[in-house]
Image (cartoon, rainbow over all chains, first blue to last red):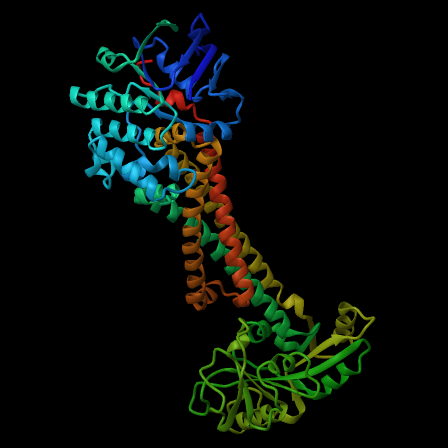
Length: 224
Length: 400
């Protein structure tokens, strides 16, 4: 599923200071192609995470539209948008994102169990993902016992388990060693190879090696 | 595989969950226990009113002035007083008197002549309208000479023989619990009590030496005739029948009613104080519990939980802890009131009768509902706030 942004812009209101509006994202047109891993690079505060959150429908834009396939994300109600995200968009947020009352496997299955149940096929897929990400042996333990790299791989498995058509990853390799970084990048590359439209936001140059397309964000302006 | 996230969240934090359960248990314990206590006191008072069952009680003047009337009639302290039968006849002839019946009192002693020291009340089954309807619930037959009916608190059973002033009396029936002082009294027919009074006189153990047992009564109970007010009939008797005092039975229990009101108010204030405190703590507990999991809730939003789903998780947690706590608290209240009712009765000094099973169930169910509503209301604030979280802001780091 292709994702298209048109005239997308985001402004924030500052709580204090002379300039009470801050433009995080200047109007941009952007397409996230299917079957490709797009890497978006930029310095901290450049607006790349804002773009990713807008594409995920996690925040409302000041202007513009985001189409996922033919679906205008911001024309949907909260319930519809949540259901759409659950079914079609996999998001790997920044930092640690585990639900600590659940085991690793249950965390991975959460996209299913949040709205229903996970049966044999879904459980098998989740276990296969854990295997591919080299954390199969940790399936039944608490996320509290995982290292940072293992937690990140668990989050990737969770984002991939529903085989989303769009995959958005925000700094998935931050704070990871070279080996873990390579594992994560290969997993995203594999998702793109399977037909997903993948966007990886990062400020680490090592990701370029895996990219099908490179974009740069600077001061809220996107460039190829 | 299905996951109840609310249940898993509670299970994962046993200390936090236990605190929430204890708090809700405390709320239900106070509301159920307090309501049951007040209800039992009110049922006890109603029972006492029903047992008195007459508009007016007429007693010898000395009985009222010496203040032992309430002691004997309301508090069940063994005691007795008599007046001549001619006064009963005079009272019966007064205008406005509808139903009328005499009662006869005698106190047994703890000496060798008597099995137990109790208040013995004699009544005339032919005319009685206060005790008979109540006794008929436990005993359908007629009382033969020597038969007695014992109150529920007495350690005697049907078929037992109790001796009073050397006279053997057969226990014909044991009454249901009334919650009043009548539970420790013995009832018998006029013939039997006259025999007992005569025997106490023969043994020199009656303060009223020289009376004719067949020509005395202790109290006269009256229901006014249609068209006459209680005050009208009461004043007429006090003016025209010498050496007697007519009192309105409602006035006799006015003191008990006042005490009951005072006790109810105090219990109400205590319940309110516990609830205000409990609800504030619950509100804080839910707020803290949700705040420390803001990131987890943000992750759920990312995965596809709607605002309503996040609120539902918080509300389910409140419902589960509420149900558990309310069940425990209500159970403890029921057990506590049932186990300590005698101590409560003695401590409060008021008639105390547990309401019927249906009413107890109703109080228990309403208590659980009240706690569930209060608990979920306390959680609703947190549920609303967490459903409106800025997911991107919570998940955003410094990189973007």
